[in-house]
Length: 343
Image (cartoon, rainbow, N blue to C red; front, side):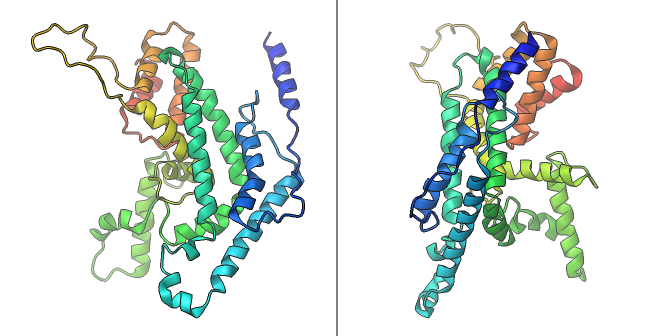
């Protein structure tokens, strides 16, 4: 039975060939943001939105389309940089070089913000598709996130030039997930008179490692473990921080999908008359939808213990990946179950 399903899944996946390079005609896709976005949007939709039975692998695009997107993005960024460098001395005297100026921001910021909005809209659409029944909510979230995540990582590789050109520059300008102001107060207390520049830099690095330990990194861990912890920390950052595109997508899944499910809805209706008997005591019930769904999963539903364990493991990994901190009550509840086997 399972073998038959596997063959069916492979067949369904095989029916989705790589997306060919769309014809741009005589138009130059790198001429403007709108033309560039129009060129790459079909690829984004194919990679992230196309239905597929293989949640562990995103649909592919043709190699010529892949190279076309890379070249077009490079040309767009280069043209924007050249335009900024060629502006007149008068424009420079008027403050064109000041941080936040639209001329300076043109090289990368506009495309980055378009991608952020794309993931914001997508995450909201996925939330709208969530079942109303709490008993099936977790079963919806897991494959939904896996499909979203694998697509986001594929787009991250496709548009890696954005990371190399724009994100890296923003981080160098202290606009990344962890800024000097975030850690300087703590480090400043440990700085002593006579400390060299190298010693202060070492203390800043140690403080950064302390932050990454909150996301699973261990001292002298592997480069892969470091990258994973940093991506989690990036996803946990506020939306005004510049992070790589994969973390950008994960962050939007948290802010637009997970956090609304973690928020207790505001109760509307008439207030109970003073002295009137309450209609059932529901104070013990979890208030957020996701908290109720986890309670159903761990304490109520009559399902196979192995399935319950797998769902709890996957949900815990999802919350961690999108930047829900380990101090959150729901992460603590899942961690307790995974550690002790009891809710």
